[in-house]
Amino acid sequence: MSTNKAVIVLNGELKGNKEECKKLIGEKDVLFVAADGGVLLLESIGFLPDVIIGDFDSLTKAQYQRYEKMGVKIIKYPVEKDETDGELALQYCRERGFNNVIIIGFAGGRLDQQLANIFLLEYAFRNGITAFIKEPGLEMGIINREKVFFQKIGVRLSLIPLDEKVTGVTITGCKYLLESESLLRYKTRGISNIIEQEKAVITVKKGLLLYVLNKSVSSSIIPD
Image 1 (cartoon, rainbow, N blue to C red):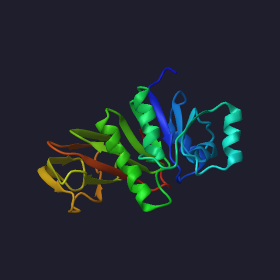
Image 2 (cartoon, rainbow, N blue to C red; image 1 turned 180 degrees about the vertical axis):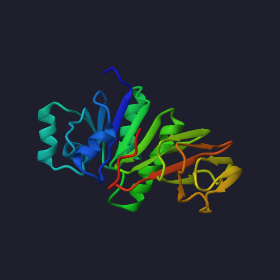
Image 3 (tube, rainbow, N blue to C red; image 1 turned 120 degrees about the horizontal axis):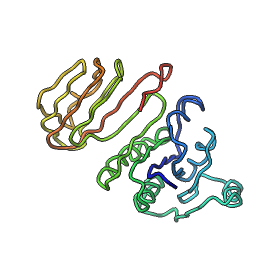
Image 4 (spheres, helix red, strand yellow; image 1 turned 60 degrees about the vertical axis):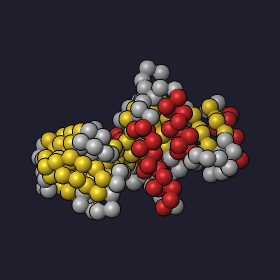
Protein backbone atom coordinates (compact mmCIF):
# COMPACT_ATOMS: atom_id res chain seq x y z
CA MET A 1 0.00 0.00 0.00
CA SER A 2 1.49 3.34 -1.07
CA THR A 3 -0.10 5.54 1.57
CA ASN A 4 0.37 5.98 5.30
CA LYS A 5 -3.26 6.97 5.82
CA ALA A 6 -5.76 4.81 7.66
CA VAL A 7 -9.46 4.96 8.47
CA ILE A 8 -10.50 3.46 11.81
CA VAL A 9 -14.18 2.62 12.03
CA LEU A 10 -15.59 2.30 15.53
CA ASN A 11 -18.73 0.46 16.56
CA GLY A 12 -20.90 3.56 16.70
CA GLU A 13 -23.20 5.64 14.55
CA LEU A 14 -22.54 7.96 11.64
CA LYS A 15 -24.81 10.77 10.46
CA GLY A 16 -25.42 11.53 6.83
CA ASN A 17 -26.07 9.38 3.77
CA LYS A 18 -23.71 6.95 2.05
CA GLU A 19 -22.37 9.46 -0.47
CA GLU A 20 -21.66 12.07 2.22
CA CYS A 21 -19.75 9.46 4.20
CA LYS A 22 -17.71 8.39 1.17
CA LYS A 23 -16.73 12.01 0.52
CA LEU A 24 -15.76 12.29 4.15
CA ILE A 25 -13.21 9.50 3.84
CA GLY A 26 -11.99 11.03 0.61
CA GLU A 27 -9.22 8.54 -0.09
CA LYS A 28 -9.34 5.29 -2.06
CA ASP A 29 -5.83 4.13 -1.20
CA VAL A 30 -6.14 3.87 2.58
CA LEU A 31 -6.01 1.11 5.17
CA PHE A 32 -9.46 0.33 6.56
CA VAL A 33 -9.31 -0.91 10.16
CA ALA A 34 -12.60 -1.92 11.76
CA ALA A 35 -12.88 -2.09 15.52
CA ASP A 36 -15.13 -5.11 16.13
CA GLY A 37 -18.71 -4.25 15.12
CA GLY A 38 -17.46 -1.15 13.31
CA VAL A 39 -17.05 -3.46 10.32
CA LEU A 40 -20.83 -3.38 9.84
CA LEU A 41 -20.80 0.42 9.75
CA LEU A 42 -17.93 0.34 7.26
CA GLU A 43 -19.81 -2.03 4.96
CA SER A 44 -22.96 0.08 5.21
CA ILE A 45 -21.15 2.95 3.47
CA GLY A 46 -19.69 0.72 0.79
CA PHE A 47 -16.20 -0.30 1.94
CA LEU A 48 -14.69 -3.60 3.02
CA PRO A 49 -12.16 -3.83 5.85
CA ASP A 50 -8.50 -4.68 5.49
CA VAL A 51 -8.31 -5.62 9.16
CA ILE A 52 -10.84 -6.30 11.93
CA ILE A 53 -9.58 -5.95 15.50
CA GLY A 54 -11.32 -6.61 18.80
CA ASP A 55 -12.87 -9.09 21.17
CA PHE A 56 -15.78 -9.67 18.76
CA ASP A 57 -18.53 -9.33 21.31
CA SER A 58 -20.45 -7.17 18.80
CA LEU A 59 -20.57 -9.68 15.92
CA THR A 60 -22.53 -12.89 15.62
CA LYS A 61 -20.71 -16.14 14.97
CA ALA A 62 -22.09 -16.14 11.42
CA GLN A 63 -20.84 -12.60 10.78
CA TYR A 64 -17.41 -13.47 12.14
CA GLN A 65 -17.19 -16.56 9.95
CA ARG A 66 -18.28 -14.58 6.90
CA TYR A 67 -15.30 -12.25 7.22
CA GLU A 68 -13.01 -15.22 7.80
CA LYS A 69 -14.20 -16.77 4.53
CA MET A 70 -13.65 -13.46 2.74
CA GLY A 71 -10.01 -13.58 3.76
CA VAL A 72 -10.12 -10.44 5.89
CA LYS A 73 -7.28 -10.21 8.39
CA ILE A 74 -8.75 -10.81 11.85
CA ILE A 75 -6.94 -10.02 15.10
CA LYS A 76 -8.83 -11.33 18.10
CA TYR A 77 -8.34 -10.21 21.69
CA PRO A 78 -9.92 -11.53 24.91
CA VAL A 79 -12.96 -9.72 26.28
CA GLU A 80 -11.09 -9.02 29.52
CA LYS A 81 -8.37 -6.61 28.38
CA ASP A 82 -6.96 -3.22 29.29
CA GLU A 83 -7.80 -1.39 26.05
CA THR A 84 -10.94 -0.68 24.08
CA ASP A 85 -11.18 -2.09 20.58
CA GLY A 86 -10.72 1.45 19.28
CA GLU A 87 -7.44 1.89 21.13
CA LEU A 88 -6.23 -1.48 19.82
CA ALA A 89 -7.08 -0.35 16.28
CA LEU A 90 -5.12 2.87 16.76
CA GLN A 91 -2.22 0.94 18.26
CA TYR A 92 -2.24 -1.34 15.20
CA CYS A 93 -1.94 1.67 12.90
CA ARG A 94 0.85 3.20 14.97
CA GLU A 95 2.91 0.01 14.98
CA ARG A 96 2.70 -0.18 11.18
CA GLY A 97 3.62 3.41 10.48
CA PHE A 98 0.18 4.78 9.61
CA ASN A 99 0.57 8.27 11.07
CA ASN A 100 -2.46 9.93 9.43
CA VAL A 101 -5.74 8.57 10.74
CA ILE A 102 -9.42 9.40 10.36
CA ILE A 103 -11.71 7.95 13.03
CA ILE A 104 -15.41 7.51 12.24
CA GLY A 105 -18.29 5.98 14.16
CA PHE A 106 -17.28 7.45 17.53
CA ALA A 107 -20.80 8.42 18.65
CA GLY A 108 -23.80 6.41 19.80
CA GLY A 109 -24.18 3.96 22.64
CA ARG A 110 -22.69 4.50 26.09
CA LEU A 111 -21.45 7.92 27.14
CA ASP A 112 -18.26 6.52 28.69
CA GLN A 113 -17.40 4.84 25.39
CA GLN A 114 -17.98 8.07 23.48
CA LEU A 115 -15.70 10.00 25.83
CA ALA A 116 -13.03 7.30 25.56
CA ASN A 117 -13.31 7.48 21.76
CA ILE A 118 -12.77 11.25 21.79
CA PHE A 119 -9.70 10.88 24.02
CA LEU A 120 -8.19 8.55 21.44
CA LEU A 121 -7.24 11.79 19.68
CA GLU A 122 -4.88 12.59 22.55
CA TYR A 123 -3.50 9.04 22.49
CA ALA A 124 -2.79 9.52 18.80
CA PHE A 125 -1.11 12.90 19.33
CA ARG A 126 1.15 11.59 22.08
CA ASN A 127 2.22 8.76 19.79
CA GLY A 128 3.09 10.92 16.79
CA ILE A 129 -0.12 10.31 14.85
CA THR A 130 -2.18 13.04 13.20
CA ALA A 131 -5.75 11.96 13.86
CA PHE A 132 -9.21 13.43 13.35
CA ILE A 133 -12.69 12.30 14.31
CA LYS A 134 -15.02 13.01 11.42
CA GLU A 135 -18.59 12.60 10.34
CA PRO A 136 -20.68 14.71 7.95
CA GLY A 137 -20.81 18.18 9.46
CA LEU A 138 -18.40 17.40 12.31
CA GLU A 139 -14.65 17.34 12.83
CA MET A 140 -12.56 17.01 15.99
CA GLY A 141 -8.82 17.22 16.43
CA ILE A 142 -5.97 18.34 18.65
CA ILE A 143 -4.28 21.74 18.67
CA ASN A 144 -0.79 21.73 20.15
CA ARG A 145 0.84 24.88 18.76
CA GLU A 146 -1.15 26.17 15.77
CA LYS A 147 -4.15 25.22 13.70
CA VAL A 148 -5.33 27.07 10.59
CA PHE A 149 -8.86 26.71 9.23
CA PHE A 150 -9.53 27.74 5.63
CA GLN A 151 -12.91 28.43 3.97
CA LYS A 152 -15.09 27.52 6.93
CA ILE A 153 -17.08 30.73 7.31
CA GLY A 154 -20.18 30.18 9.42
CA VAL A 155 -18.92 26.97 11.03
CA ARG A 156 -19.16 26.75 14.81
CA LEU A 157 -15.79 26.27 16.50
CA SER A 158 -15.38 25.14 20.10
CA LEU A 159 -12.09 24.86 21.96
CA ILE A 160 -11.89 22.53 24.97
CA PRO A 161 -8.73 22.39 27.11
CA LEU A 162 -7.34 18.92 27.69
CA ASP A 163 -4.92 20.28 30.28
CA GLU A 164 -6.12 22.04 33.41
CA LYS A 165 -4.81 25.31 31.98
CA VAL A 166 -3.93 26.09 28.36
CA THR A 167 -1.96 29.32 28.09
CA GLY A 168 -1.15 31.81 25.37
CA VAL A 169 -4.30 31.10 23.35
CA THR A 170 -4.78 33.48 20.43
CA ILE A 171 -7.83 33.34 18.13
CA THR A 172 -8.12 35.26 14.87
CA GLY A 173 -10.70 35.12 12.08
CA CYS A 174 -13.60 34.30 14.42
CA LYS A 175 -16.45 36.21 16.01
CA TYR A 176 -14.84 36.07 19.45
CA LEU A 177 -11.13 36.87 19.49
CA LEU A 178 -8.43 36.17 22.06
CA GLU A 179 -4.93 37.57 22.38
CA SER A 180 -2.52 35.39 24.38
CA GLU A 181 -5.06 34.45 27.06
CA SER A 182 -5.65 31.28 29.08
CA LEU A 183 -8.43 28.71 28.80
CA LEU A 184 -9.28 26.56 31.82
CA ARG A 185 -10.59 23.01 31.58
CA TYR A 186 -13.29 23.68 34.18
CA LYS A 187 -14.50 26.89 32.47
CA THR A 188 -16.60 27.04 29.28
CA ARG A 189 -15.14 30.13 27.65
CA GLY A 190 -14.00 28.34 24.48
CA ILE A 191 -17.40 26.95 23.52
CA SER A 192 -19.48 28.04 20.48
CA ASN A 193 -17.31 30.51 18.62
CA ILE A 194 -18.12 31.21 14.96
CA ILE A 195 -15.60 31.40 12.12
CA GLU A 196 -16.15 34.66 10.21
CA GLN A 197 -13.18 34.93 7.85
CA GLU A 198 -11.70 32.83 5.05
CA LYS A 199 -8.73 32.08 7.28
CA ALA A 200 -9.05 31.48 11.02
CA VAL A 201 -5.99 30.74 13.15
CA ILE A 202 -5.69 29.28 16.64
CA THR A 203 -2.29 29.40 18.35
CA VAL A 204 -1.28 28.00 21.73
CA LYS A 205 1.86 28.56 23.79
CA LYS A 206 1.43 25.72 26.28
CA GLY A 207 -1.10 22.90 26.61
CA LEU A 208 -3.45 20.90 24.43
CA LEU A 209 -6.82 21.95 23.04
CA LEU A 210 -9.49 19.74 21.59
CA TYR A 211 -11.20 21.58 18.75
CA VAL A 212 -14.70 20.78 17.52
CA LEU A 213 -15.95 22.06 14.16
CA ASN A 214 -19.70 21.71 13.86
CA LYS A 215 -21.76 22.39 10.76
CA SER A 216 -25.32 21.37 9.92
CA VAL A 217 -25.51 18.09 8.01
CA SER A 218 -28.04 19.72 5.71
CA SER A 219 -25.24 22.00 4.51
CA SER A 220 -22.17 20.96 2.58
CA ILE A 221 -19.60 18.78 4.27
CA ILE A 222 -16.71 20.50 6.02
CA PRO A 223 -13.99 20.55 3.36
CA ASP A 224 -10.56 19.04 3.99
